[in-house]
Image 1 (cartoon, one colour):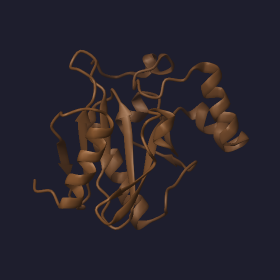
Image 2 (image 1 turned 180 degrees about the vertical axis):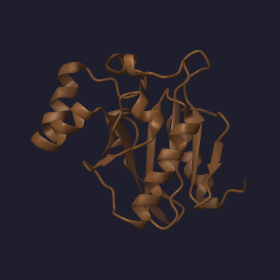
Image 3 (image 1 turned 90 degrees about the vertical axis):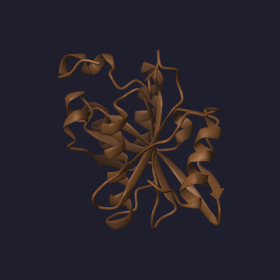
Length: 184
């Protein structure tokens, strides 16, 4: 897969921010949307940054996770496509997902938020080439977390995250162990 100067710059910015020189794994889908992932943990504790390549907008969606990068790369590309063709997704939006991989793990929607919720050194805004890119973290939510956000607002959800010390990176968390239909 060939990369544009912009796409190369996006990858390099993400890789440099996380201090990795790991190779980019890229994915292209039939609708033309693309995503990539790069390893930031070591192979004994593989953490991936999974991100979309913006086409028409200046929004880039990403996940920082130990979940299956190929499955989640599809979701990040789908968020990018949805943002560019349907509705602008920005901070504090909640987006449902029907992805079987996520649903089997107990995740039913995403909170679109600042990447700093998972990685404090990641700037949510960065100039790449002649484009000012806005970065958005797609944080998976349980049904209960989604209901808290929808019924009581974002501040209530963030307070609950703090009270529970909510892990924003681990895909397989205690709430979803019983739902897992696969082994890692």
